[in-house]
Length: 244
Image (cartoon, helix red, strand yellow):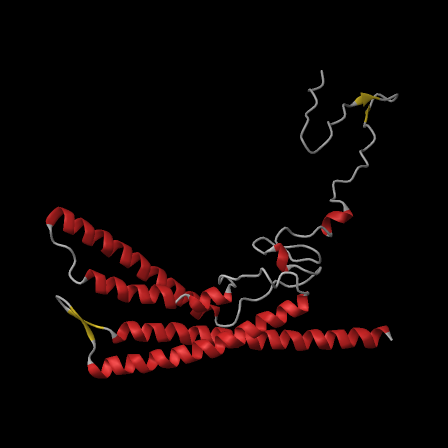
């Protein structure tokens, strides 16, 4: 008796030997189906590849405005802006921990952290000023667009650039005034009068650092917008010339 046929998930069952007229077992016709992969499989895009009209993982679909477009690079100087923002987050965490510790010490042991109010004020300066550039790079500052929403896209871009120019001038004046204040406080030894002598010029200097980083970010944004406008104008001129 012949052995039972074996089946697999990828191959057809083996044919049984059948006797022929001459007594020798005759083999069944060979299966002509090919196990090779279909031709279209080689052209299938890789899940992690970048092809025209596709968006890779981690890419905002809004960035892929045109088929085959490359995801935009991070803004120039983003690492510095992010480092300042991370430092501001660390200062915020330190301020929260010290505030809770001072409150617990006051109520449990009648011994709060000395000069906690002055320390919290100085830490708050870092929390407010250091993330300004990173927030500008991510376009996450508070905006009121009630009156500009009906404007055409080109006019809205003009308004945005005008706002950046006004901010560049205003923050430059503020940074200059605060830098002079920091130098004056350093020269005179200005300090909080409490249990300990806490100088005020470090907090003023931190504010100046945050403002200077914001000015650099605004300058980079203006230069980038100008370059993009020039590239768009050149592309439009090429399209018109090609159409003619």
